[in-house]
Image (cartoon, rainbow, N blue to C red):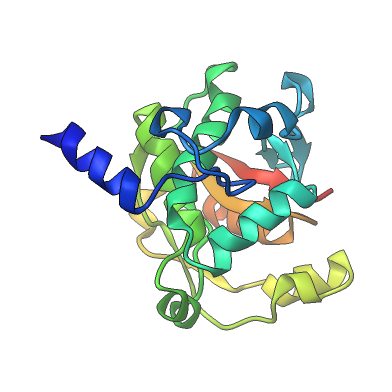
Length: 217
């Protein structure tokens, strides 16, 4: 019955590559062969950078034009199905290098932005990644105030000042003594992830590691 349903759905809404938008087979898992070969994937030793505060951020891709065009559809235009192939790409970072954590969480949108958009793209990535790696996924942080859009600020100092104090814990007891992996979508200066990592560490997390789908720097 499922195969019949899938066939009907494929006829009505054929699966498309999340990068080039060409029609693909369901078995391609969201990415056509041509785009998979062109992805700006980083080698194992290149997949990390240091954030302010000494935290590590892990990411599989460079944020080039190919990734950007796809990602904007995911973030702003409701292409939530992209979370599945994106999460699979991100999961490869951890399959090559055994990783231990207790909880996967994400950098949350403000309440108003989430309501307007209808979903939180970082949450979708965190849920997809945790499912693939067999890890617990929970909401740990919430954004306690509206801030200026980080991408509109020119310098790292402006971004750090803008985001400072913007995140709070949902429940401090969830964090104490735990190893936390926090997910964001794109890391640019790293100011937002650094601030979230700082809040988690200050609350008593044993270890905090960050990860993102791609890095713009």
